[in-house]
Length: 236
Image (cartoon, rainbow, N blue to C red; front, side):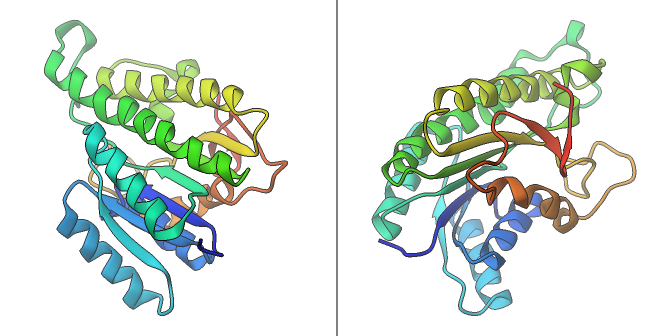
């Protein structure tokens, strides 16, 4: 079994996911970099090893919409390290920009929910039993301010609904594992300079990742079932 804590990051081949994987590695964790395409995952892991000599980085193919792929990635992580301590669910899509809820494209809605909600749910379901084995876990769902019901407006309805639902899942899971040393939280990176940027002044993925790292490495008395941007609470 690895003596280091082990983190798995979904969607870690580029953008925010890659920045989060790099941050966890710098923090001293062993990191499993995952992506839908195995080659992309391997290339991202190789970049991290070059950037951070001596880091423990492994690559696995993981398509969050494919239950078999999810199961395989977590099983391989357990085989390699004997544990899992941190799950950062960063994989997500935004494919309904400019759409209205009253003139919807159901296929885009289905694909968005399958990735942004069900994908994170599948991963959490695999991660929690592994975390319970060591009485330690941190799960961070990468959400969005666009999923805040308090601030909800129109536009991009599938994306908004998927992130609001992801926040609900965060609350449900956080309560379910309340007796375990597993903290589940949602985090909004804010407007970030990635391919999913919806416009506006954006911060770099590296800067956004810094604001989320504290949830992934929170102490045992850290927050649970919260929604944050940086360390500021976002209204549900």
